[in-house]
Length: 330
Ligand code: GZL
Image (cartoon, rainbow, N blue to C red; front, side, top):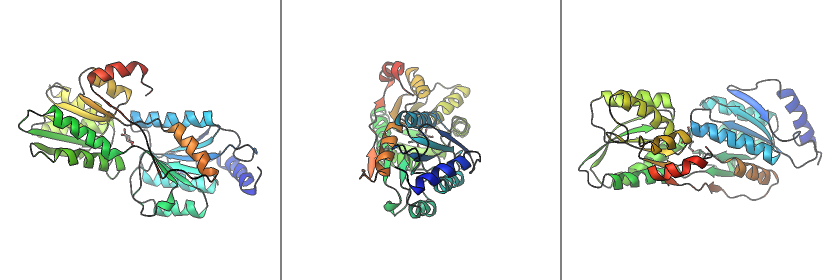
C-alpha cells in the first residue's frame, strides 16, 4: 500500500544510503525497496553491539541472512561496543523513518531518551539479546533473548557437582562488559548458587569485556597474583579461550590444574571443551534472526506480540561437545 510515510522512507533511504550517518559502520542488505514497493516488505533498522566475540559474529550473520530470507530491507550498524554509536544509529533510523527498530543494548542503562524519540516518531522498537533497565516498558514492544540469570545458575550448579568433594574452591571470574545485562545477570545467577556453600570463594573478579584478548590479559594478572585458582568462571567462551592461552603460558594445564566453566557454546569454545581444555559450557544461542524477522513483521502490522520471548538453550560436557561439533551451526 502506498503511503506518504513509505514514499518519504524510500526517498530518505536513497539519500541516506550514500552517507554514513552515525559512528561505527552502517550497511544495508536484504529485502526489496522499503515500503514504497506496495509489497508487505518492511524496513528494519538494527543497531548491533559490535563484533567482539564469536557469539556476536554468529548473531550478526543470523540477522543478516534471515532478513534476506524474510524479504526484510535491513539497515545494519556496528557500534564497536560504544553506546553513543548505538544511540546515533537509532537516531539515524528514526530520521530514515524505518518501519521498525531493533537493537542489542551494549549496557542496560541510558536508553530512555532515544527510545522516547522513537516512540514520538511512532517507530516500534524490539530488544534482542540484551535488556535495558528502563522503568517504562512501553518504550519497546518485546524482548527476544536468553535468561542470563538461568545461565549463571547452570554454571554454578555444575561447579557444585564438580567440586562436591573439595574442601575449598578458589574461583577466578572473568566478567563480561561492565553494566551489560549478561555480565550482571550471569554473575548474579552463579553467585546465587555457590554462595550456599562457604567453601566456594570468588577471590578474583574483573571484566574481560567479552573479548579473547582482554580475557588473556586479565587471566595473566590473576595468575601473577599468586592466589590459588581451582576454577575459572568465564562469562563467555572468547574470554575463556584467551584465559587458556594465559594458563598454558604459565605452564599450567587448563581443564586440569585450573578447571573452566564458560557460557555461549560457540564453535571454538566447543572445540576447546572437546579437547578437555574447558570442562563445561552453558549454551546461549545467537541464532535470533528468524524469530526477529517474524516479530518485526508482526509489530509493523500492529499485531499483539509477547513482551518476552526466551530462547531454548542446552549445556554441554566434553562428550556432548564431541557429539554436537560436526553439526554445530555456529
Ligand atoms: C549474550 C551476549 C554476549 C555473549 C558474548 O547474549 O550478549 O555478548 O555471551 C557477547 O559472547 O559478546
